[in-house]
Image (spheres, rainbow, N blue to C red):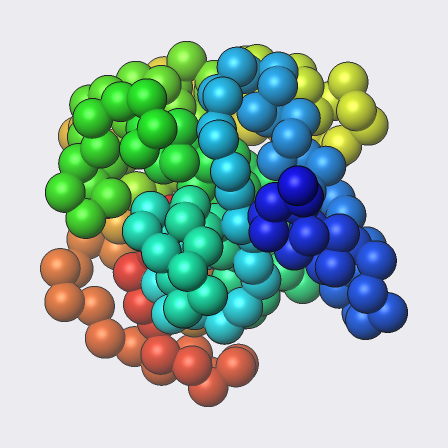
Length: 203
């Protein structure tokens, strides 16, 4: 019997709508990450929707509004102005939450605990406790993307990225069009370009 997850994937990738090609890529890469990195995720529902501006994506372990588990969401707000490799980084980030729920010990409320961060780091995603994601210069993640023809720009050394998160109080905030790093815990600012308030980016 065909599972509802397979039916959903087929609908998303064949339905005559403007996101068909996007969903084809997201499902293709979700399966590629699962196979290449041996995540062994049982089932996965992928959606693209509007989320809080402070998030590039999200993961829901329990049943969503349709009764589907392991929902990975990509925030459509950031599809146009982010390099595709970062969108795929968000997809892998959220898939790692699914991996941890299936095979590890997830932190409460999808907290990015040591187990999660260690697994992510082994693949090339440098993630702090708040969920902010950076990328190692050379890693299984970037090498896999480059093998498949996905352009990855020059990245700063991972040691400097790790040092940034462990010693600096700078945190990443985003409006609709711009990212900034500030040390103020309660940063409140309005972007004069897109007229959106800056919010903390958690993943």
